[in-house]
Amino acid sequence: MLPAVRSGRVVAAVTAALLTALASCSAPPPPPRQVVEIPPPPPPPPPPTPESVGANELGEVPVLMYHRITPAPTSVYDRTPEDFRAELERLATEGYVPVTATEYATGRFDLPAGAHPVVLTFDDGSPTQFTVDGSGEPAPGTATRILLDVAAAHPGFRPVATFYVFNPPFEEPGGRRSLAWLHEHGFEIGNHTLDHPNLGRLAGDEVQQQIAGMQRVITDAAPGAEVRSIALPLGVHPDDERLAADGSADGTTYHHDSVLLVGSNPAPSPWSADFDPANVPRIRSQAATGPDAQFGSTAWLDLLAADPARRYTSDGDPNRISAPAGLSTQPAPAVADRLYRY
Image 1 (cartoon, rainbow, N blue to C red):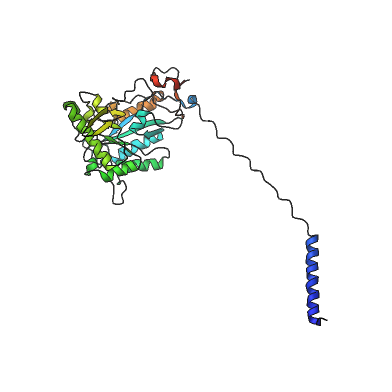
Image 2 (cartoon, rainbow, N blue to C red):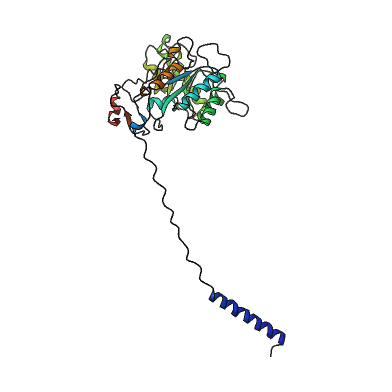
């Protein structure tokens, strides 16, 4: 027989268990789980039609030429940092997107519908274009720093350009720090010969030594960089014009997809029958006043803004070339099957 206290505890425990069981049996079942169906996202809107953006991929492309970016200009080729920033801001606001010289010449660029390509080129490798500061970044006030800042403020405005350098690039013997930084950050490095001579006054072997020699300097400093474009010093071809694009010297072979002049007008579309990769004209960056200002960047950008049908406007489809039906510019034969007229 259990002691009274112990038997009372057992009875209490059994009673509690029975009450708990009864309570669980009488509790209502949980409500059924509701499955909420999330509708699929709506399909993206269709891309704009070439007609709606006024696409003209046979239009003209401004290839802008810069030299020094300095607070104290001494020549018509110089621009102040403020002028340079203002020109970039204008390009971004007007829907231009920078592409490299090689991207332009080969047509390997993919722009949003309605955008216009522009090529930013820098000659001579001046430290005002690019210099690294103590932290290894482009120094304030240099063209590269300004370009990066404008691109950060305008999403879609690509911070790319082509720098045509001679020896030593950016006044850095060997150019290892500067050229490596530019290559690693997506900028193009082009050839401007070793010593910036008038190529029209050199023999063929000297022309090739000047060009091949500078290619070696670039590729030694920036392994992996492909030198595929040249800007002719003074805009002058060698007597044998083919040597600007192809040649070799001392075991180094070079090939350039584009040969850039000094020029004074926009360049043809790379899809146009008028496009000549061996003679790409450029426009000097310049204010609306000064010597030959009518051929400078401000005058030409004003003209293209006033006559937008004249400039290259992307249709947003890299596999198609769109142009108005009434346009007199003819496509290059190799791309005629990709042409869409409207």
